[in-house]
Length: 134
Image (cartoon, rainbow, N blue to C red; front, side):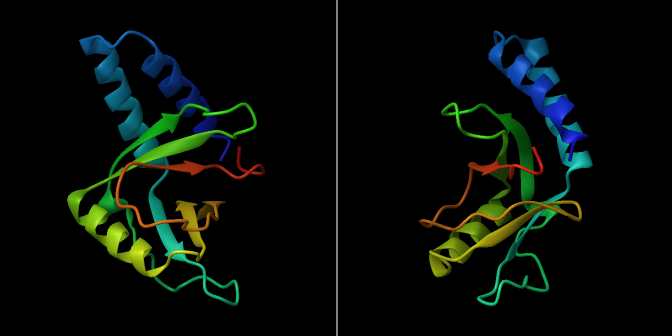
């Protein structure tokens, strides 16, 4: 996961600068690089703590990944996820049925977060990296 840190730092620096045409192009390029190094997928965590066999969100459902700035000082680094239309539909339906349940978020084969679905959602969400992955 340490390979993602430099990309997240660059994306935050470019994202915080004035939004010129070239900085937007740099952000787009950084997003593509992050997506290629971090094929994101999300699987259900079953009641016994094991993982569902298949992910309900796969890399083809992800339209964009961006570095997320901290909302408060104790918050860890994170990734903003934007889903495709198909991914948005899948996430909405899935999160409506699974409020209160955990999901496991993976970057390739490495689990990076295990949040609980607190309310139905569909698109533009943040994945906070767990302490050991940051």
